[in-house]
Length: 204
Image 1 (cartoon, rainbow, N blue to C red):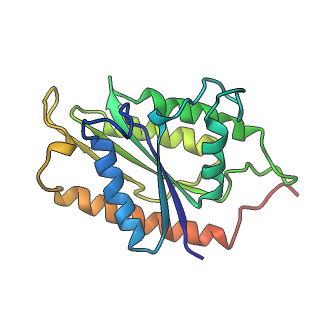
Image 2 (spheres, rainbow, N blue to C red; image 1 turned 180 degrees about the vertical axis):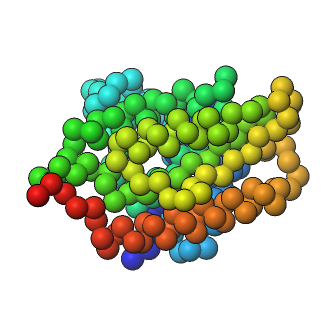
């Protein structure tokens, strides 16, 4: 059975924006590589949806999160892409992570979170320093709520500090980014396949 990959695009732009999204460009590179592994992929632009603030899986009328949560839990791999804003992950990315806090209490009869056995990776773009800091924040949050992080499961690009060039402006993808993307996908797909057939042990 093909691996299922869900990408959450944490850009502040919507999918209908006339401006090109650097985060979308990076995610597109990774998704293309996943497809070479015959994975089934889907991308959700978080800014398109009314994800309510909160830390439960359903914050009531008009909340778009329950449908996104269903997609997350039906996927083998969660890919989170975020730009760097003020040295931090984007606000919509943080909101998605906050909503996954509910997984801490959503466990099976062996005490395993609903996210156990699912693998996560991260993509970061910006035209200032901060990729390692943002990656660390997102990885720690994902680990806290039950996702498994493979080796080298991040691809990032940052331009000159206080510069005006964005990843979307580049005529060619740098070789270092291509190498990161290939490694991210290779390791993430490998680990997802391993966990598919060998779930974490639960409480005895």
